[in-house]
Amino acid sequence: MNWSGVSAFYVAVAYAVALIAMGIEVVTLWRRASNRRREE
Amino acid sequence: MINSKVRWYKYASPAAFYPLAVKIVPWVGAAATALLVFGLYIGLIEAPTDFQQGDAYRVIFIHVPAAWMGMLLYVLMAGYAGIGWAFNARLSSMMASSMSITGAMFTFLALVTGAFWGRPTWGTWWVWDARNTSTLILLFLYIGFITLQSVIDDPRRADRAGAVLALVGVVNVPIIYFSVKWWNTLHQGATIRFVKESTIAAPMLAPLLIMTAACWLYAIAVVLARVCCMIRERERLTV
Image 1 (cartoon, rainbow over the protein chains, first blue to last red):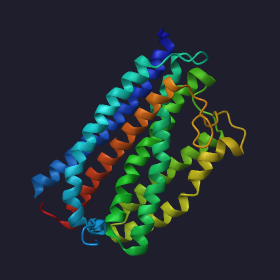
Image 2: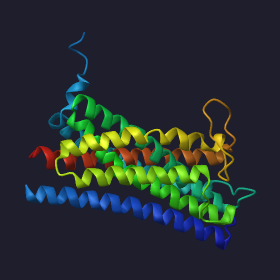
Image 3: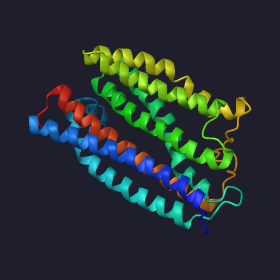
Image 4: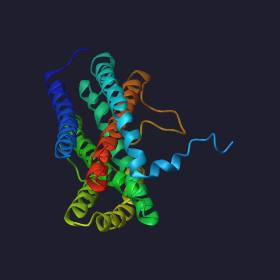
């Protein structure tokens, strides 16, 4: 494998956006569930 | 004989479904994480470099599963919303609401990762071709569904209004899928086919299928987890 700098940048940003979006969804859900348990 | 069968329809009740979903979520979430890590390793390190696109093509391992999930979740969302509307099934409507956020997230990812693939391969972030535009409309349909549900205070009325929008908008999904056949688009045609031989090489197909499975499991886990929250909020369960 011989990554060029340009390709590595585009691929890295695309995967970073994807993982951050999934992470935000999971953390938001986790907090929603935690808040609900605390209220109960 | 009938008594020995599992009565699946009992899980249509939110109270019966909740304990089952709570048990499933951690296992499916763990499997999704494991497959995601494995898929990223195979896709970013083990898969060979494409002779034309170089390493930029590796964006497909998240772009394609995200686009598939965006379309599939919309069809499922419309189905659940329709069942919830027709049979007054609360759990179906909750499933539809839960899927809308994950579906919107995957559609957004398909558009963003597509832009990061388009820039090095097409030379542009965006073109108004049929595939891109119809996928953008899908994102707007998801946003419309989420907004419509959030502005109506009564959940049952919100479910009915959302169901109408979801069912009308489902016509956009076949348009997205067949857009590359019906119109002359810059977006490439299908490389993975169910009836003919796929035109993608096996070492590239394997990580694509692994990442697709990971995205499926991720979607199942987060949709069920969100439904659990909604059941607690709507049904005031203290489980």
